[in-house]
Image (cartoon, rainbow, N blue to C red):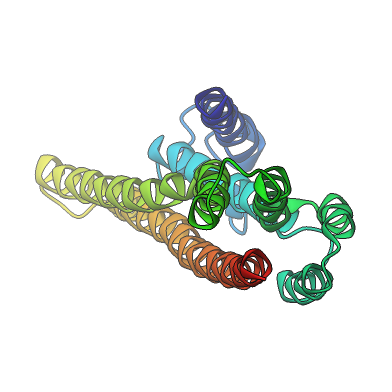
Length: 260
């Protein structure tokens, strides 16, 4: 499912970006020479950026991908946090468990939803199943609870970190493509100068504009991706820390209850 989602996002962003590049930015009405599209009309920003060359379309797709993955991560992490803040939920459920009401704690997990609630719910269910089972020693009961926690964490943690690697990858590729466009633009500028033997303002400006617009596009894509990658990494680390704190509190409550 993850690979399908990423494939759909990449294809859709590429298609959208190049359609925008070819038919909107490259609309003939934006140029003084609509057939060759080398001279954008004064003040037409879209047509001016179009002269940066085909790599502009690729860079636009990277920027669009960065926006899509930012929105996707924001929605996913917001859903994983549940209906209340993790801190409030942890305080509430530990208070309920300390009072010995496992069923009420499970009801709170069902109401909260999200990754933290799923982990604690699996721990409570497993503890409820083994608490009165004479086949398990006290240490084994706690081991069973920990095993249930570990299994649920192995399911929840990848969901929190999913697609972060896409943001870091796009940041790297966007920078490299921008640099490639810059190099190509400068090569064209100096080729035009070498072939004509004189300074052709039009050809020189076309090459320089291609270089600069690709540089700008690559930097914009990289800045968005790096910023959001660092932000989401910080958020996920904080959330995982909250989960670990909640697990420790719940485990202590279960330990105390078993030893009574």
